[in-house]
Amino acid sequence: MKKLLTIVLIIISLNTYAQTVITDSNFEEITNGRSAFEDDGSTLVIVEFYAEFNKDNSFQHWAKLKGVKYYLCDIAKSPKAKKNHKVRTVPHLIIFKEGYDEIHFKAGLDFTLSEDLEDIQKAIDKLNEESKF
Image (cartoon, rainbow, N blue to C red; front, side, top):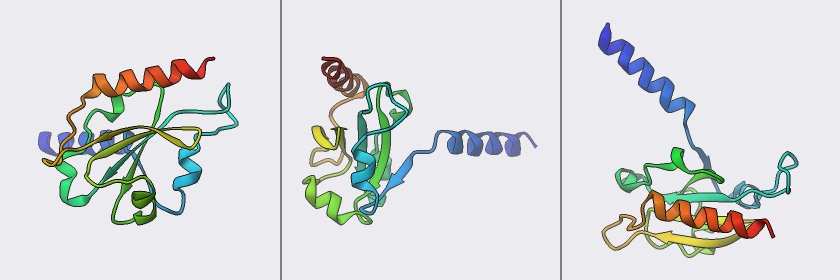
């Protein structure tokens, strides 16, 4: 019974914090970052390009990011977005500001990101600070 309860709690927590997967069909709309409900009309968006074969190396701290909306993009299902943003390795994170790809965090040949949560958060904070002017 204890194991069952643990499994149920894990499933619920995963669903609560599930990331939204985007594809070529809605990529531009989402990365535009405009919302009628935001004070200034725009929001930073970060997209993680990933592949099923490399899910173990995906960015693990997405729930801790502040000041940005986080989305996943499977490169197998989004070849147009992959090509347009020059994604060559995964994971590959791109921060979008008003539809423009501002900052890229690319995996190395070992298919891991060298940047950590702190590096990515600093980039987000810098872009948000620039948006105030």
